[in-house]
Image (cartoon, rainbow, N blue to C red):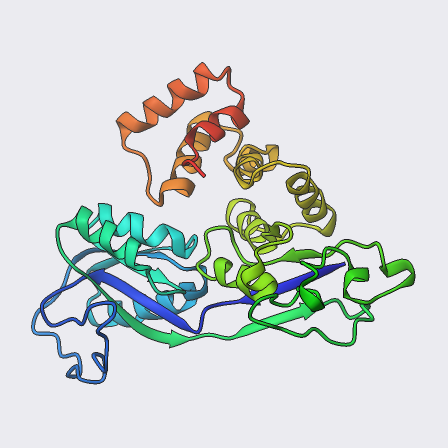
Length: 310
């Protein structure tokens, strides 16, 4: 039986290169409250990319719709695959605004500012909720949280609970392992989920990124996974497969290939677009076809080769 953790950090952050009037990440104060109402002085065109937090995708869509009502010539691309993708993209592209559901660490800020040769600014633009869900059939009456042991710490410093029996259940529940499911692997709150569950004692098992698998199905295949499919992928993870293996498996599946009309050109272009947020150039397209051919047209190996290091 699973203990599911659905959470976001209390603050949602908008991060970009800092003009002189922006407060730094640790100097926000009432920066937004002190801003004058927006009054455009000229038409704006060009492209802006909003990259990062899945929690902020709907908020980014609202920003995009509102901005384009004022500036219809502006092009706004939204690429929300997780908070951990925001800062690397910010360092590469001056047209990126990063979306994070956690604050950037001091080390991350130093690294990105070193790459940019300038400061970044972080503004809190919203607050989100935190929830812990246990299946309704689970007879455990309550979970108690502590700083040292989190939710799964056992009393008396006896370590971390790994079965429901460790938390006091008996009978058929005593040997059932606790499985923790949480948000996407590149989601900002994942580290906070780990501390919530295990506290300062450290993790007692891996968090199964249930939401990440669901998001990939929805994004790559246009549907949610069945319970059997979800269970099969989670079992693969528990047996040692990586999330990259799961992602490659979905992207290289027969269903994904059929969605590209069983066409090699469409397939390599769509895999590239899903992984990079933009279509390949003609030169990149030919290079992708060459790579697929070198892999003997084995789609799974081709896709694994394109995935970024985990």
